[in-house]
Image (cartoon, rainbow, N blue to C red; front, side, top):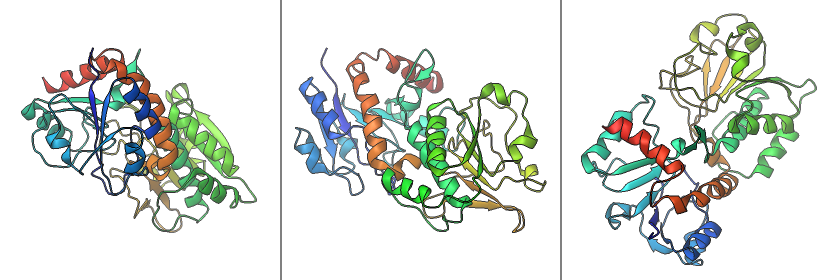
Length: 341
C-alpha cells in the first residue's frame, strides 16, 4: 500500500515548541517510502534545516490548508480558527470528545469540510493509550508545584532543559521535605510526577483508582502538594472543590496535570480554567490559607526537546498502519465517527 504523505504543520499556539516527529525519525519514514513535508515555524524547538538535511520538503507556515488531497496533517495542539471547514485528515490533540469548551465547534469544522480527525489521545490498543506526552507532563507539573511551594515560582515560565529544571529542584531542598500526594501514580503522568518529586526530595504518597473509590479527604488535605494525574471520562467524586478552600488544611499547591478544567469530568472543580505560561498560578483563599493551582495545558512544551524525542519515538512505529487505519488508528477513527455522526 502507498505510504501517506505526512505534512508536519507549524503550531498555531505561540508558546508551543514541540514537534510530533523529530528529524531522525523523519529520515526513517522517508527511507520506508513516506513523503514528509515540514512547514517552517518561528517557534519549533528543531530548526527546519535539520529536517531538510534528512530529505524532508519545506513548506511555508500555514500552507497545510493547500496540502494535496490525501495528505495527513500532523501537529500537536489546536488548529488555527481558519479555515472554517476542514477537509484533510488531521492528527493532533483535539480535546473534543469530553464536552470541553469549543469541542462542538471543532467537530463541526470536520463535518462541514468532510475531513477526518485522528485524535492522538485516542490512539489505543485494548483501551490503553500508546502515544502520549504524559510522562513529561507529570514531571513538569510536579516540578512546578514544588517550586511554587518553595516560593521559587513567582512569575512566568519558559522552555528549559531537564537538567536546568532538576538543578532548580535539587538546589532548593528544604530542611523538612514537603508532603506530596500523586493521584494516578501508576500511569504515564503519574510516573513522571513521582520521578520529579524524588529529585526534589519530597516525601511521597501515591494513590491510584482503588485509593479513591472512597476518598479520604482529610488525608488529601493534609498534604502540602497534590499532583493530579487522573484521566476520567465520567463524573465522579472530585478531589478538591470550592468548599475545601475555606476548611482547615495543610494543602497549599495543586498541580493539575490532567487539565480537564472545562469538562464535567473535572476532578478539581475548585478551578475551571487553564493557567498560562505568563500567569502559571491561580490563587484561591486568603493570605493566611492560600491554595495555589497550576493548570497549564501544554506542560510538556516547557521541556520541548525531551518531550518531542519521546513522543516521536512512540508515534513513528505506528505510522505504517496509518494508510489503512488499522491498529490504534482504527480505535481513534471509531471515536471520531461516533462523535460526528
